Amino acid sequence: MTTIIAVSVLASFLIAAAIGPALIRYLKKMHFGQKILSYVPEHAGKQNTPTMGGFMFIISITIVTIAVNLVMGGVSVQSFTVLVLSLCYGVIGFIDDSTKIRKAENEGLTSGQKFALQLVLAVIFLSVLHMGGYLMPSLYIPFAGVSLDIPWLIYVVIAAFIMVGCNNAVNLTDGLDGLAAGVTLPVAVYFIVIGAISGNLPVVVFASALAGGLAAFLIFNFNPAKVFMGDTGSLFLGGAVAGLAFACDQPLILVLVGLIYVIETLSDILQVEYYKATKKPVLDENGNPVRDAKGNIKMQGKRIFKKAPIHHHFQLCGWGEKKIVLVFAGITVLMCILAYFGVAPRYL
Image (cartoon, rainbow, N blue to C red; front, side, top):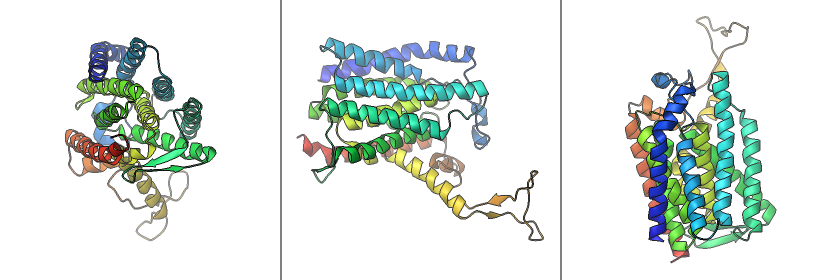
Protein backbone atom coordinates (compact mmCIF):
# COMPACT_ATOMS: atom_id res chain seq x y z
CA MET A 1 0.00 0.00 0.00
CA THR A 2 2.82 2.42 0.90
CA THR A 3 4.51 1.77 -2.44
CA ILE A 4 1.30 2.39 -4.37
CA ILE A 5 0.78 5.69 -2.55
CA ALA A 6 4.37 6.82 -3.15
CA VAL A 7 4.34 5.86 -6.84
CA SER A 8 0.94 7.50 -7.47
CA VAL A 9 1.84 10.75 -5.70
CA LEU A 10 5.29 11.02 -7.30
CA ALA A 11 4.16 10.08 -10.81
CA SER A 12 1.27 12.55 -10.74
CA PHE A 13 3.54 15.29 -9.37
CA LEU A 14 6.20 14.74 -12.03
CA ILE A 15 3.72 14.60 -14.93
CA ALA A 16 1.93 17.77 -13.85
CA ALA A 17 5.19 19.61 -13.15
CA ALA A 18 6.60 18.54 -16.51
CA ILE A 19 3.65 19.70 -18.61
CA GLY A 20 3.11 22.90 -16.59
CA PRO A 21 5.47 25.26 -18.46
CA ALA A 22 4.35 24.06 -21.90
CA LEU A 23 0.68 24.36 -20.92
CA ILE A 24 1.17 27.92 -19.65
CA ARG A 25 2.94 28.90 -22.88
CA TYR A 26 0.11 27.39 -24.92
CA LEU A 27 -2.59 29.19 -22.89
CA LYS A 28 -0.75 32.49 -23.37
CA LYS A 29 -0.36 31.85 -27.10
CA MET A 30 -4.09 31.16 -27.43
CA HIS A 31 -4.89 34.27 -25.33
CA PHE A 32 -6.82 32.19 -22.80
CA GLY A 33 -6.64 34.87 -20.13
CA GLN A 34 -8.77 35.41 -17.04
CA LYS A 35 -11.10 38.41 -17.07
CA ILE A 36 -11.32 40.08 -13.67
CA LEU A 37 -14.67 41.26 -12.36
CA SER A 38 -15.02 44.99 -11.71
CA TYR A 39 -16.40 43.82 -8.35
CA VAL A 40 -12.83 42.81 -7.38
CA PRO A 41 -10.65 45.81 -8.33
CA GLU A 42 -7.89 44.63 -5.98
CA HIS A 43 -7.24 41.82 -8.50
CA ALA A 44 -7.03 44.11 -11.52
CA GLY A 45 -3.31 43.33 -11.88
CA LYS A 46 -4.21 39.68 -12.57
CA GLN A 47 -6.16 40.56 -15.70
CA ASN A 48 -5.37 38.14 -18.57
CA THR A 49 -3.36 35.72 -16.41
CA PRO A 50 -3.65 32.37 -18.26
CA THR A 51 -6.63 30.31 -17.10
CA MET A 52 -7.73 26.68 -17.56
CA GLY A 53 -4.45 25.63 -15.97
CA GLY A 54 -6.44 22.92 -14.20
CA PHE A 55 -5.62 20.74 -17.21
CA MET A 56 -2.20 20.39 -15.59
CA PHE A 57 -3.45 18.20 -12.75
CA ILE A 58 -6.44 16.79 -14.65
CA ILE A 59 -4.08 15.18 -17.18
CA SER A 60 -1.69 13.83 -14.53
CA ILE A 61 -4.49 12.45 -12.33
CA THR A 62 -6.17 10.75 -15.30
CA ILE A 63 -2.96 9.14 -16.54
CA VAL A 64 -1.83 7.93 -13.12
CA THR A 65 -5.24 6.66 -12.00
CA ILE A 66 -5.70 4.59 -15.16
CA ALA A 67 -2.09 3.39 -15.34
CA VAL A 68 -1.84 2.28 -11.71
CA ASN A 69 -5.21 0.53 -11.89
CA LEU A 70 -4.14 -1.33 -15.04
CA VAL A 71 -0.89 -2.41 -13.40
CA MET A 72 -2.93 -3.73 -10.47
CA GLY A 73 -5.09 -5.81 -12.81
CA GLY A 74 -7.78 -3.53 -14.23
CA VAL A 75 -9.58 -0.24 -13.62
CA SER A 76 -11.93 -0.64 -10.65
CA VAL A 77 -15.53 0.60 -10.71
CA GLN A 78 -14.83 3.02 -7.84
CA SER A 79 -11.74 4.55 -9.44
CA PHE A 80 -13.44 4.75 -12.83
CA THR A 81 -16.64 6.38 -11.57
CA VAL A 82 -14.84 8.95 -9.39
CA LEU A 83 -12.49 9.81 -12.27
CA VAL A 84 -15.30 10.06 -14.82
CA LEU A 85 -17.42 12.17 -12.45
CA SER A 86 -14.49 14.56 -11.92
CA LEU A 87 -13.78 14.73 -15.65
CA CYS A 88 -17.45 15.42 -16.47
CA TYR A 89 -17.56 18.23 -13.93
CA GLY A 90 -14.32 19.47 -15.45
CA VAL A 91 -16.03 19.51 -18.87
CA ILE A 92 -18.77 21.74 -17.43
CA GLY A 93 -16.02 24.04 -16.18
CA PHE A 94 -14.28 23.96 -19.55
CA ILE A 95 -17.51 24.99 -21.31
CA ASP A 96 -17.89 27.79 -18.77
CA ASP A 97 -14.28 28.98 -19.22
CA SER A 98 -14.54 28.80 -23.01
CA THR A 99 -17.74 30.85 -22.96
CA LYS A 100 -16.08 33.51 -20.80
CA ILE A 101 -13.09 33.70 -23.14
CA ARG A 102 -15.30 33.88 -26.23
CA LYS A 103 -17.39 36.66 -24.71
CA ALA A 104 -14.29 38.36 -23.25
CA GLU A 105 -15.97 38.68 -19.84
CA ASN A 106 -16.19 36.85 -16.53
CA GLU A 107 -19.66 35.39 -17.12
CA GLY A 108 -20.05 31.94 -18.66
CA LEU A 109 -22.84 29.40 -18.18
CA THR A 110 -25.83 30.51 -16.16
CA SER A 111 -26.22 29.17 -12.63
CA GLY A 112 -29.30 27.24 -13.78
CA GLN A 113 -27.41 25.53 -16.59
CA LYS A 114 -24.57 24.56 -14.27
CA PHE A 115 -26.94 23.27 -11.61
CA ALA A 116 -28.90 21.08 -14.04
CA LEU A 117 -25.75 19.51 -15.50
CA GLN A 118 -24.19 18.95 -12.08
CA LEU A 119 -27.37 17.39 -10.69
CA VAL A 120 -27.73 14.93 -13.57
CA LEU A 121 -24.10 13.85 -13.23
CA ALA A 122 -24.46 13.39 -9.47
CA VAL A 123 -27.52 11.13 -9.86
CA ILE A 124 -25.76 9.01 -12.51
CA PHE A 125 -22.63 8.67 -10.33
CA LEU A 126 -24.62 7.63 -7.26
CA SER A 127 -26.70 5.16 -9.26
CA VAL A 128 -23.62 3.50 -10.79
CA LEU A 129 -21.98 3.05 -7.38
CA HIS A 130 -25.23 1.73 -5.91
CA MET A 131 -25.83 -0.77 -8.72
CA GLY A 132 -22.23 -1.96 -8.36
CA GLY A 133 -22.81 -2.64 -4.67
CA TYR A 134 -20.32 0.03 -3.56
CA LEU A 135 -22.83 2.47 -2.08
CA MET A 136 -25.67 1.72 0.30
CA PRO A 137 -28.44 4.21 1.19
CA SER A 138 -27.16 5.01 4.66
CA LEU A 139 -25.43 7.98 6.24
CA TYR A 140 -22.52 7.23 8.56
CA ILE A 141 -22.40 9.67 11.50
CA PRO A 142 -18.79 10.51 12.41
CA PHE A 143 -17.89 10.25 16.13
CA ALA A 144 -21.24 8.61 16.89
CA GLY A 145 -20.21 5.44 15.09
CA VAL A 146 -23.69 4.74 13.74
CA SER A 147 -25.29 4.68 10.29
CA LEU A 148 -28.78 5.89 9.45
CA ASP A 149 -30.57 3.77 6.85
CA ILE A 150 -32.58 5.86 4.39
CA PRO A 151 -34.92 4.88 1.53
CA TRP A 152 -32.92 4.93 -1.70
CA LEU A 153 -34.90 7.67 -3.45
CA ILE A 154 -34.60 9.99 -0.44
CA TYR A 155 -30.91 9.16 -0.15
CA VAL A 156 -30.31 10.02 -3.82
CA VAL A 157 -31.96 13.41 -3.42
CA ILE A 158 -29.93 14.24 -0.29
CA ALA A 159 -26.69 12.85 -1.73
CA ALA A 160 -27.08 14.60 -5.09
CA PHE A 161 -27.56 17.98 -3.44
CA ILE A 162 -24.53 17.33 -1.19
CA MET A 163 -22.45 16.62 -4.28
CA VAL A 164 -23.66 19.65 -6.20
CA GLY A 165 -23.17 21.83 -3.13
CA CYS A 166 -19.62 20.54 -2.66
CA ASN A 167 -18.84 21.09 -6.33
CA ASN A 168 -19.97 24.72 -6.27
CA ALA A 169 -18.35 25.35 -2.89
CA VAL A 170 -14.91 24.32 -4.19
CA ASN A 171 -15.52 26.47 -7.25
CA LEU A 172 -16.37 29.44 -5.03
CA THR A 173 -13.21 28.88 -2.97
CA ASP A 174 -11.06 29.36 -6.07
CA GLY A 175 -10.72 33.11 -5.60
CA LEU A 176 -7.11 33.68 -4.59
CA ASP A 177 -3.76 32.43 -5.85
CA GLY A 178 -3.29 28.89 -4.51
CA LEU A 179 -6.43 28.90 -2.34
CA ALA A 180 -8.52 26.11 -3.86
CA ALA A 181 -5.48 23.90 -4.51
CA GLY A 182 -3.95 24.68 -1.10
CA VAL A 183 -7.14 23.80 0.75
CA THR A 184 -7.88 20.69 -1.32
CA LEU A 185 -4.39 19.19 -0.95
CA PRO A 186 -4.84 18.24 2.75
CA VAL A 187 -8.32 16.91 1.90
CA ALA A 188 -6.71 14.60 -0.66
CA VAL A 189 -4.19 13.43 1.97
CA TYR A 190 -7.07 12.73 4.36
CA PHE A 191 -8.70 10.41 1.82
CA ILE A 192 -5.37 8.69 1.20
CA VAL A 193 -5.18 7.87 4.91
CA ILE A 194 -8.82 6.78 5.20
CA GLY A 195 -8.55 4.72 2.03
CA ALA A 196 -5.44 3.02 3.41
CA ILE A 197 -6.84 2.10 6.84
CA SER A 198 -10.13 0.90 5.29
CA GLY A 199 -8.38 -1.13 2.60
CA ASN A 200 -10.09 0.86 -0.17
CA LEU A 201 -7.31 0.72 -2.77
CA PRO A 202 -9.21 2.53 -5.58
CA VAL A 203 -9.71 5.52 -3.29
CA VAL A 204 -6.05 5.44 -2.28
CA VAL A 205 -4.88 5.52 -5.90
CA PHE A 206 -7.14 8.37 -6.99
CA ALA A 207 -6.53 10.44 -3.84
CA SER A 208 -2.76 9.94 -4.17
CA ALA A 209 -2.82 11.07 -7.80
CA LEU A 210 -4.93 14.06 -6.74
CA ALA A 211 -2.44 15.03 -4.03
CA GLY A 212 0.56 14.77 -6.36
CA GLY A 213 -1.12 16.75 -9.13
CA LEU A 214 -2.18 19.55 -6.78
CA ALA A 215 1.27 19.79 -5.22
CA ALA A 216 2.79 20.31 -8.67
CA PHE A 217 0.09 22.80 -9.68
CA LEU A 218 0.84 24.94 -6.62
CA ILE A 219 4.35 25.51 -8.00
CA PHE A 220 2.72 27.60 -10.74
CA ASN A 221 -0.41 28.77 -8.92
CA PHE A 222 0.93 29.98 -5.55
CA ASN A 223 1.06 33.75 -5.22
CA PRO A 224 1.98 35.39 -7.52
CA ALA A 225 0.19 32.93 -9.79
CA LYS A 226 1.55 32.23 -13.25
CA VAL A 227 -1.68 30.42 -14.13
CA PHE A 228 -5.20 29.94 -12.75
CA MET A 229 -7.01 26.60 -12.70
CA GLY A 230 -10.23 28.16 -14.02
CA ASP A 231 -13.63 26.56 -13.63
CA THR A 232 -12.16 23.66 -15.60
CA GLY A 233 -9.95 22.85 -12.63
CA SER A 234 -12.14 23.94 -9.73
CA LEU A 235 -15.22 21.99 -10.88
CA PHE A 236 -13.00 18.96 -11.49
CA LEU A 237 -11.72 19.29 -7.91
CA GLY A 238 -15.25 19.66 -6.56
CA GLY A 239 -16.23 16.45 -8.31
CA ALA A 240 -13.11 14.70 -7.04
CA VAL A 241 -13.69 15.66 -3.40
CA ALA A 242 -17.39 14.76 -3.48
CA GLY A 243 -16.69 11.55 -5.38
CA LEU A 244 -14.05 10.42 -2.88
CA ALA A 245 -16.38 11.13 0.04
CA PHE A 246 -19.09 8.90 -1.42
CA ALA A 247 -16.62 6.25 -2.57
CA CYS A 248 -15.58 6.05 1.10
CA ASP A 249 -19.24 6.15 2.20
CA GLN A 250 -18.47 9.31 4.20
CA PRO A 251 -20.52 12.17 2.70
CA LEU A 252 -21.12 13.88 6.07
CA ILE A 253 -17.38 14.12 6.72
CA LEU A 254 -17.30 16.81 4.02
CA VAL A 255 -18.59 19.27 6.64
CA LEU A 256 -15.34 18.81 8.58
CA VAL A 257 -12.66 18.28 5.92
CA GLY A 258 -14.39 20.83 3.69
CA LEU A 259 -15.04 23.37 6.43
CA ILE A 260 -13.38 26.14 4.42
CA TYR A 261 -15.60 25.32 1.44
CA VAL A 262 -18.63 25.52 3.75
CA ILE A 263 -17.57 28.85 5.27
CA GLU A 264 -16.85 30.35 1.85
CA THR A 265 -20.31 29.34 0.62
CA LEU A 266 -22.17 30.44 3.74
CA SER A 267 -20.43 33.82 3.74
CA ASP A 268 -21.60 34.40 0.18
CA ILE A 269 -25.18 33.29 0.91
CA LEU A 270 -25.41 35.35 4.11
CA GLN A 271 -24.03 38.43 2.36
CA VAL A 272 -26.54 38.22 -0.48
CA GLU A 273 -29.56 37.45 1.70
CA TYR A 274 -28.74 40.11 4.30
CA TYR A 275 -28.25 42.69 1.54
CA LYS A 276 -31.66 41.80 0.08
CA ALA A 277 -33.36 41.89 3.49
CA THR A 278 -31.98 45.34 4.36
CA LYS A 279 -32.31 46.89 0.90
CA LYS A 280 -33.88 50.36 0.91
CA PRO A 281 -34.18 53.19 -1.64
CA VAL A 282 -31.22 55.56 -1.88
CA LEU A 283 -32.38 59.06 -0.93
CA ASP A 284 -30.98 62.44 -1.94
CA GLU A 285 -30.42 65.35 0.45
CA ASN A 286 -34.11 66.24 0.22
CA GLY A 287 -35.26 62.75 1.13
CA ASN A 288 -36.39 61.87 -2.39
CA PRO A 289 -35.53 58.52 -4.02
CA VAL A 290 -32.53 58.65 -6.36
CA ARG A 291 -33.14 57.20 -9.83
CA ASP A 292 -30.69 55.79 -12.35
CA ALA A 293 -30.44 56.68 -16.04
CA LYS A 294 -33.36 54.37 -16.84
CA GLY A 295 -35.59 55.93 -14.24
CA ASN A 296 -35.38 53.02 -11.80
CA ILE A 297 -35.08 53.80 -8.09
CA LYS A 298 -31.61 53.00 -6.80
CA MET A 299 -31.57 50.54 -3.92
CA GLN A 300 -28.90 50.01 -1.27
CA GLY A 301 -28.61 47.31 1.40
CA LYS A 302 -26.30 46.56 4.32
CA ARG A 303 -23.48 44.01 4.32
CA ILE A 304 -22.21 41.62 6.97
CA PHE A 305 -18.75 41.33 5.43
CA LYS A 306 -16.66 43.91 3.65
CA LYS A 307 -16.88 41.67 0.61
CA ALA A 308 -17.90 38.06 -0.02
CA PRO A 309 -16.84 35.28 -0.29
CA ILE A 310 -15.00 35.61 2.98
CA HIS A 311 -11.47 35.45 1.55
CA HIS A 312 -12.15 38.87 -0.01
CA HIS A 313 -13.25 40.16 3.41
CA PHE A 314 -9.89 39.22 4.90
CA GLN A 315 -8.12 40.84 1.97
CA LEU A 316 -9.88 44.12 2.69
CA CYS A 317 -8.93 43.69 6.37
CA GLY A 318 -5.30 43.87 5.27
CA TRP A 319 -4.40 40.19 5.03
CA GLY A 320 -2.09 39.24 2.17
CA GLU A 321 -3.06 36.42 -0.19
CA LYS A 322 -0.30 34.14 1.07
CA LYS A 323 -1.42 34.57 4.68
CA ILE A 324 -5.05 33.80 3.82
CA VAL A 325 -4.09 30.68 1.87
CA LEU A 326 -1.78 29.38 4.61
CA VAL A 327 -4.33 30.05 7.37
CA PHE A 328 -7.19 28.44 5.43
CA ALA A 329 -5.01 25.45 4.51
CA GLY A 330 -3.89 25.16 8.15
CA ILE A 331 -7.50 25.13 9.34
CA THR A 332 -8.23 22.39 6.81
CA VAL A 333 -5.31 20.30 8.11
CA LEU A 334 -6.68 20.58 11.66
CA MET A 335 -10.19 19.66 10.49
CA CYS A 336 -8.83 16.65 8.59
CA ILE A 337 -7.06 15.45 11.74
CA LEU A 338 -10.27 15.87 13.72
CA ALA A 339 -12.23 14.06 11.01
CA TYR A 340 -9.76 11.17 11.16
CA PHE A 341 -10.52 10.60 14.83
CA GLY A 342 -14.22 10.78 14.07
CA VAL A 343 -14.02 8.10 11.38
CA ALA A 344 -11.00 5.90 12.14
CA PRO A 345 -12.75 3.79 14.85
CA ARG A 346 -15.01 2.49 12.09
CA TYR A 347 -12.03 0.69 10.53
CA LEU A 348 -9.55 0.10 13.36
